[in-house]
Image 1 (tube, rainbow, N blue to C red):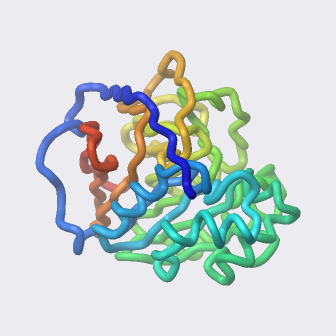
Image 2: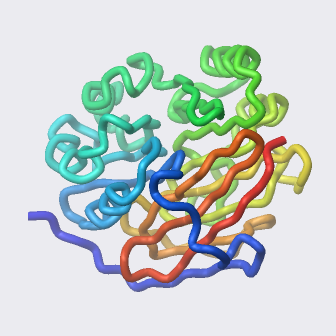
Length: 288
C-alpha cells in the first residue's frame, strides 16, 4: 500500500506579467512536461502529478531523483512504473543523486535503457519542436577539461539552433536547502557562451523561477539563462528560507509539473499544480 504525505500548502508568487493571465494552450500544443524528485512507495504525490501527464502531450523530461530512496530496479518497478512509468515511451530522463545510491546508477540505466543516454555517462541531446535539448549528468565531473564538458561544447557547437534548453538535477541558483551548492563554472560558462536560453533543474523540492542571469548570478535580460527549479514531482517539500536575488516566482509545499510550449523563436511556460492547489506561474519570452 502506498502511503501519502499530506503537507500544508504555502504558495508564494512575485507579482509579474508571468503570474495570472490566460489559461494557456490546450494539451495538444504542449512541447515538454518537466519535474524531478518524483516517486516512492510511501507517498502519493507522484500519483497526483502522473495524472497531470495523462492530460497533456509532449516530451516528459524528468530532472533527476526519479525514484526514492536509492533508484534500485525494485523501486523503479514498484514505485515509479505504476505512475510516471506509464509515460515511459515519451520520457527523456536526467539522473539525480538518489539514483547513485545504487552502484553506478544501475537501476536507472537498466530501467530507462537507451533513453538515458550512454550507460555510465547519462548525457545526451535531442531535437524537438525546432529546439535543441541537452541532458546532463550533474553527478559526474563538470569541471574544465572533463569529458562531459568537452562533449557539451561540441554538441552545442554542432547544433546551432535558435532556441536551446538544458536540463539536469542540481540547480545553479536556489532559495532552498541547497542554495550553497557549488555552481560548476565550466558548465555555466559553456551554457552561457553558447546561447542556451533555459535550464531546468530539481534537487530542491519546490518550484522557483529566476530572471535571466549570467553564470555569476547577475541579471542579463539580453543573453542571460532563465532557470526553473521543478523539484515538485511528488516528494515531500523542504523548508525554504530567505529568497535569493533575482528569484521571480516561487511556490513551496506544492506538487506539479512545468509545461512548456516551444515556438521557433520563443517559448511559453506554465507551472501546472496538482488538483486542489491554486498556485500558477505562466509567461512567455523570446529566445536569444
